[in-house]
Picture: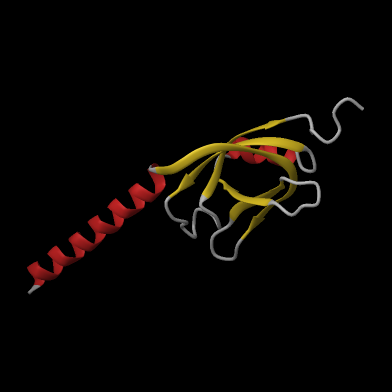
Length: 120
């Protein structure tokens, strides 16, 4: 009985580890988005995650929400608050609560010139 219980527990742990490794390392898509960084905060009760939003339109009708794990990217985003930025991100297959609130994780950020204020 003890042997069967140990085997079942090992199988469950192995399946969870495989699922987590797949969710964490495999990316569904990668891409870039640009917009004005309108929100960036550290939030959560049990799991503190860094979450942000960029506005991709003039009226703010198109909002792209994202999560961040990398400390260097977090520092840059805090510096670029309120500015026009270009984000490189990867989309995971599913969201995991202790990693972030979204499936989109920013891996690079750079400041860009706003297309709304060019040549002025």
